[in-house]
Image 1 (tube, rainbow, N blue to C red):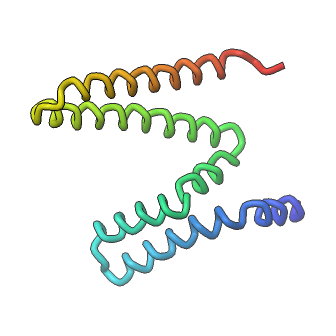
Image 2 (cartoon, rainbow, N blue to C red; image 1 turned 90 degrees about the vertical axis):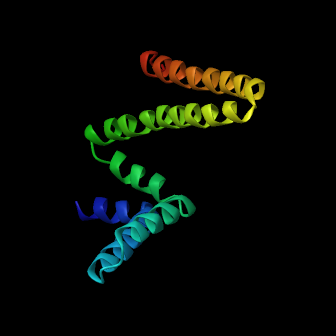
Image 3 (tube, helix red, strand yellow; image 1 turned 180 degrees about the vertical axis):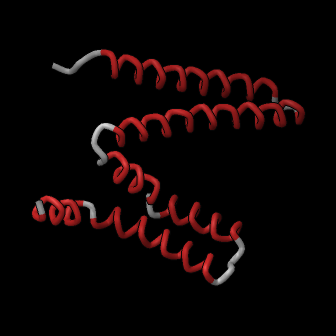
Amino acid sequence: MWSAVKGFFISYWKAIAIVGGIAAVVVVGLYFNVDAKVLALFALIAGFITNGFVALATLVSLIPFVGPLLVKILSVPLVWLLNALGYFISAVAIKKGYGAEVVSHRMMTFILLLGIVIGYIVGNLVPLN
């Protein structure tokens, strides 16, 4: 039992250190009444720079049965959120007079996202034997 726990910490020590470090800074900041917006910005920037979100997803996916499902559920809506953000940015660009460029770029983005979704569905339906 303990050798399995020891192996876990040896294998994922970087991920544990990154997530623990970001969490520790946020907890200490909350203790000293630092503004929550500043702490959220720090956690966001530190997570992107250190790949902390990937480390957190890796640690969550290690939970049997539930972990991989949670990672899948949380990662696919992010793609759709980015697509929605692109639509709002496109509306602003069209108002500024960049209509033709926006149409071509949005079409490429839509095709890319459609390919990702179809690949995700086919990859989960077809078993690898």
